[in-house]
Structures are given as C-alpha cells and as structure tokens.
Image (cartoon, rainbow, N blue to C red):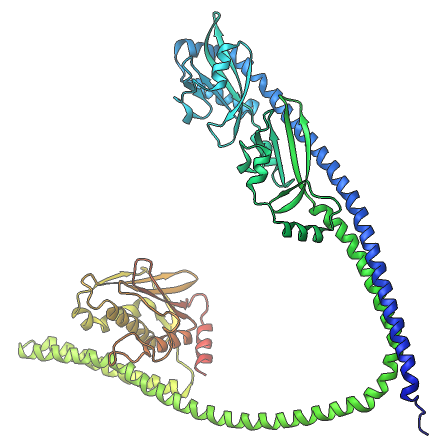
Length: 597
C-alpha cells in the first residue's frame, strides 16, 4: 500500500511559514544578545576600571612611603659622618689611606648608593667607588651649598656614576670652627625604579619644576611629562578608532603609551613638591570584562543552537527518507564505479612501475660494480707502478736486496688486490662480513705505509696525534685501511700545488673512536653532495666520484659514520666515528651484516 504524500502546492505555505518563524526567532535572539552584551560591557568596564584605579592609588601610596623612608634614613648619615673623628683627622693630616675602606664599610651598614669625601677644593679624596678618586666637583651644587651652610643640604642632579639622577645629602665637616671638607651621601632611590618595572606600564616621579627624576622608562629622564609622552609615536586617528572599537571603551583614555590606551593616576609626594604619576593599561580590565562577555556569548550561541535544532528536527526527519531512497543510492553507485575504475588504473600503473624499477635497479647495480672495481684497484696499481720504477733503478745500481724488498711490497699489493676483488664479490652478493677486532692505530700505520711512495713524491707535512694504547674496534681490516687510504689521497689532492701543504691525522677516544683527517687545502664547496655517487671536484679522468660514497658505505657497515666539514682556518676536515670494542663487541658486527643485506 503506497504512502499518500502532500502535493507541492499544499507544502509551500507551510514551508514558507516555518522559514518566517525561524528568521524572526533568530533575529530576536541576535538583537537581545547585542543589547545584553552592550549593557554588560558598559557596567563591568566602569566597575573594573574604578577598581583598577583604586589599586593603582594604593600602590602609589606604598611607593611614596618607600621613597620618603629612604630619604629620611639617608638624611641623618652626613651628620654622623661629619662628626666622625677619623674622617676629620684624615682631612687635617691629608692621610686618606684608610678613609675609602671606612666609607665602604659605612655604605654597607646604611645601604646607601655611594659616599664621597671631598676636600676644600672639591677633589674626591675618599669614596666608595675608587674610580672617582681624584675627580673634582668644585662647581657642583652639593659642594657649593654645603660650604655656605652648616646644615645638611639635599640636591638632585645628573649622576656622575650612573646615567640617572643622583639624590645627594651633603654636609660640611667643621674643625675648630672652620670647614675642612664636605661629606656627600647618595640616597639609593634607583632600586625603586627596578622594583617598579613590570608592575605597571610606566611609573615616574617629577620634581617641583615638572622634570622627571625617577622613572621606569629610561628615555624619559630629564624631560617633562608632556615631552615624554610626545616622544613616543601616538597612534593615528584611524588606529585610535579601531582601538576604541576593539576595546568597547566607554570613556576616552587618559593617554597613549607604547601605542596603547592607558589610565593615568597621580599622587603627591610630601617632599619638595614632588609628584608621582603611574600609567596603567586597560588590559586587566578588558580581560575580566571579556571573560564575562565570552560566557554571555556562549550562552546565546547555545540558545541559538537549541532553537535551530528544534526547528530543523522535523525537516531533517522528512528529508531523511528521500535522501536514503534517491540521492544516497545514486551517489553511492557513482562513487563505487569511480573507485573501481581508479583501482584498475592504479594496478596497471603499478605493474609498469615495478617492471621499470626492476630494470633500473639492474642497470644501477651493474654501473656501481664496474665503477667500484676501477676505483678500488687504482690505488694498488699506482703503488705497484711506483715500486716497479724504484726496483728498476735499484737493479741498475746493483742494489738487489732493496729491489727484493720492493718486489715483496708488490707481492703484498697483489694479494691486497685479490682481497679487494673478493670483497667486491661479497658486496655484490650482499652477504655477511667477517668482522674482527682491529687496532685502529695499526690500521693508520698500515695505510701510511701504503701511501709512502705518494708521500715521498710530494713536499707535505704529516702531523700525527695518536694515543699510546690500543684503540680496538670491530671491523674488516682491509676495508678499514681502504677508507683511511681514500681520505689520505683526497687530502693529498686537496693540497696539491700549495708550498706549505700540511695534513693532520688525529685519533681520539671517548664514547667512540674518532679519527679525523684535516688538510689546509681550499675546503669543500658543496657539503650536501659530497657523499653522493659520481660527484667529484676533480678534473675529468682524475677521479670517478665514488671514493667517499664507498667509504661512507663501508663505515656505515662497521656501525659508525663518516662526516665532513670545513675548518675555521681553511681546509677540510673528515671525521670517522666507530664504536669501541669495549663498549659493544657484537653490535657493530650485527649492524654490518644488516647493512650488507
């Protein structure tokens, strides 16, 4: 029995009515949310701003009390020191050898910034800062006014020991009714600047003339507050409008500091007409207000989501059957057909790629094997040629015993070439490697003996730094010597043509054995391609570009690594790191077998 569905003409008015109710409900909720958020923002901003201002005023009262306490404590020090008989006797006798030490001890007791003792010419004869000894302050206000009065004088002037303002209490030292010197004590007010930093955006103390004498902003010192605020770039009118819109500010800011709107709070310091001014940002106010606004917005968003869910639930139920019966079936059918066609195409492409990769691997292996054989046999062949030439000359000179020694070396080289071909066959088969404990020092000596003919034919200085004891590693001795010989040949080629050619060989032990070869040649231009096969800086015919690639592979089989970098003074440095046999005896062997496989 078929379902009776309403006609399109009957469904149209109902659908239009539902849309109208939905739009009206959404509009009402949005309007209500805007009104509530605006009222909440205005009320909370005013309340939190006033709270922040009260806290700033309390903090300024604390700062003011600290300044007054420090000034009052320092003001009595000059009177005490002016009556000190030791300082008086030093001014009378001119012996100030112990005066600076006494002033340093007094400064540590009273925690003053500095203390200076001046004679009647204004010259510093004793001071807590010995660098000021001999300095003259004959025209400074704290010296001139102290001579005119018998009371303690307070002055604020540009600092002699620091770029800030000095707050000095000075008093004349009198003996027999006559002034013989002046004692100057500087109050330690700069410590308050350091303690203020980070609490408020900016704090400043101005004197009775409006000049800034203490501040957390170093560039403000010596300026008036108007000059200090003008010194910073104020935001443009557009930036201020955007800032005001972003902050939802109800009142204009007191000032702009570092491009941000700030609140200005001012209080009086009961000392010579000083005033303290603090600039506090609205960040803390905005953070608290925004937290409440975020909760309100979240609540309205949840309310809208619930409304949308209730209104659209019936529509989702009605359309679910149609989508299941028509759209989903057609889309599923189309998607399945497309996936079947794509999978068949991928399978065909994969078969072609596998055939191409197999052929490329065969060609690459064949080229690598032929190039490796040519490169690895060139070194013994060159040495044999040199030994044969030397043996010929020795036979001509009837030095048969030495010639026999050369023939013996040629025989050793032939045996070595046989070992190399056997190793290349093993490498081609990717089988295991017969590793054994090898003394790295002995391998270096053997490699140097192999390179002896080439070294004698060149003027090169060889520096060796080797430990006295054995350095045992797990490796194949012949392949290890091949790596060392290859590094030595590269160093010889790099220093060719240099009159002061030098090669340094260094062997060090720690967690691993590190063998380094350094030359004073031109260095390496491209470190990234250095160990790539067939890459070389030599001229055509002089190298195949496989030496370092093969050496790096051999060292990796030993469980180590081969690296290179340019030396700071010029030249190149190659480092070979191998695990010590004392740390792990079987691990390098296992790694070498896995690498060969």
